[in-house]
Length: 334
Ligand code: ATP
Image (cartoon, rainbow, N blue to C red; front, top):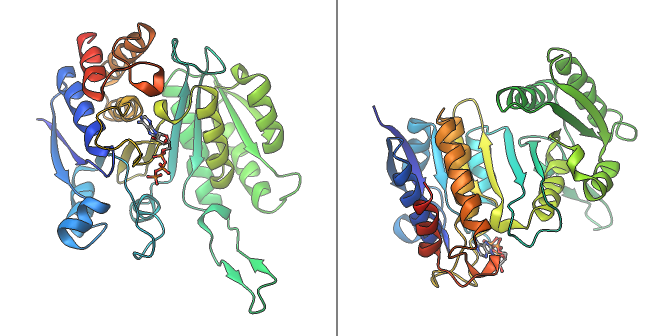
């Protein structure tokens, strides 16, 4: 029976890169069916809501969604639709691979690492944010739980195991933030003891930033708390050529949403020149998640081939190709 996924085409360049991505997925012929639903500006225009209940229901029903970038207008209920989706479905693991593609203008070659970021707690969620009446003092509560730490670290080790990766680096600041980061590190050590086949390393976050720039090849899987992961995963995207090639998955026990890390790029929307690769790589993560691992590998190889041969690549990769032409070049390699 065909697996149905919820598809949100998104705003700005979203529809262009989604159409290209779906065409490539079609060529892979893994038996996926799509239910198209709306969120963001497209949903607002049709229904007056940014995140309609029908969209939430479709994600809950199919448990897997592929999502184009969304624009959240200022002052419309929530600060970010993406953050709202993470909350609604308790998508606790943000998984962002950073993989080098030969032929891009990246600063480094041969990088292959994954950042696993806790997505639901810690300073990033801004719990209890307040400014004193005199405007002189700002506060926020940073909460880390044993449950939140345990499930993200376990996710990282399981991912290492299933993806044939050998090493997990636990990134923290437990030397200074002894309660919050301290608890995360303590739980990480306990979980690590269940995975004797995987090497475990610990690294303080500031040193990790330096090590990523000096010697990124030493990393394999990085697992860390929400705010550190937010920053480190963008740093990792920068190592391998920027946001045009950076996919992300948001995974929970009830649902998973796959996406490109970049935004809706309003500056190039409608011109047919957006690079579809980040969303395509998000689709490859989705295929892995659905158990279509060989198809995911074929897709990554086809993307790698098209980029290496500079076959119809888009302007951000130094070519003069279109979104559609680039997708054709990838389809031709499948
Ligand atoms: P948003 O408000 O939706 O986050 P933004 O413009 O602030 O939009 P991005 O959409 O991430 O942020 O875009 C940052 C820059 O990267 C822009 O110049 C954009 O054109 C470029 N960019 C982003 N995604 C792509 C893509 N897929 N292909 C080519 N260029 C891209």
